[in-house]
Image 1 (tube, each protein chain N blue to C red):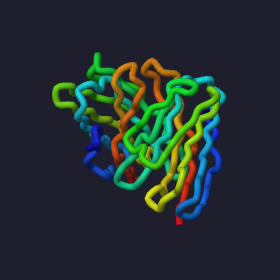
Image 2: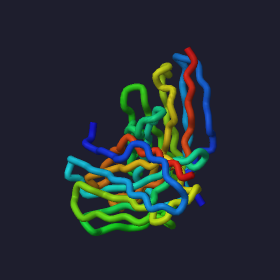
Image 3: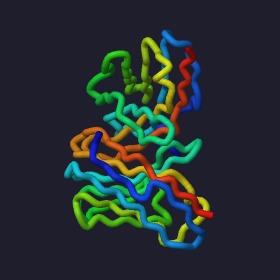
Length: 112
Length: 112
């Protein structure tokens, strides 16, 4: 069973609007979470992270929210841009265990 | 960009042949990982290493072995390749301590 789940394989958003990507996890030992962005034929690149001591982390247009009781995190992109079109993966790890589990990814398409 | 080099970038092989993929880093990071990316499954951890000669299994380790004789090199071996091992393989590195992963550009492996 996958311990990190992204239930939406794809998402389409208009340029300038908000993109919301969701991720759920099952392992209560996870306390460090990351989002990665991946373009075709390239390796994933780090976007933003959050530890379980926080419920929100912001970096420019990207904000990650963590709801520990629901074992749910989300990535908000505001405003969305066509260059944001990519596959987004969420990942989780128990703190200081350095074993990262990834979700299946959500393909975001931002339409001009 | 993190100094990670994967070789080869592409490989086509036949069922039953041994295959070795190489990951080389210049960052002197302690942790190294091998993931495979497949449609619908996202990134799944095959094996990882937490130091020279220290390795552990991931989610999908059957049919794969790894070795790390030097800090900078992490080898992934398919002893007898099968068609189900056709995939894109990514190496990643981390300095540990809940630091993020940096990924290589990937190896496209096709087993015919």
